[in-house]
Length: 207
Image (cartoon, rainbow, N blue to C red; front, side, top):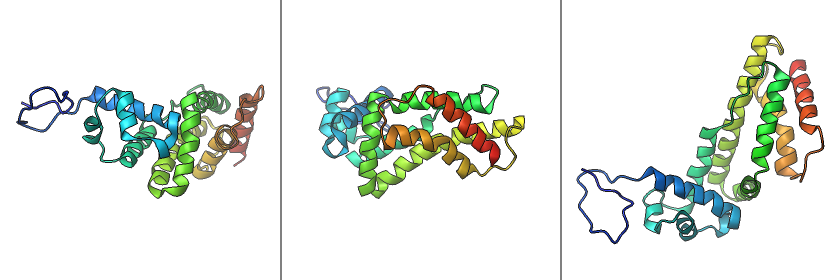
């Protein structure tokens, strides 16, 4: 028999017969609250108290899972890499790139993401641990999708075999991140994603 580690403190305490059980729904509520708190106040002003309040749990529920604010944010940021992006399968390189850009553009322009990403970039400049986790989350997600798009294009004969994966990743991911994250363009020009997909496909074919 095990006890529930997230039981309200008003219940009588029982001696655990095994490892305490951490409810997954509480864990997910805390992770969601981290994103909301980051978007609302930023990393510097974010607190365990504020996260717990948004999640509707006590501070002890947070500390049972993460020993500090830094470890909590690192865990949530690292989880971004696991979620990843869907791999397009339109039957052509240009079509795959266009679909990838549409999905990525919507994600980057989401109100929460548009607040969190610049804030974490600023913190990454001051904190090597956050820098490593943030770069891994972004790179792993994009690299996994980009490599599969290029591999499919190789099988169709649209690009030569053995394309430099790092250069391909830069060509595929760089322009949109520059627009949406670095200069934070409020609105993409009409037809921009189509032109970007066509230009990137052409660049990859020329490698």
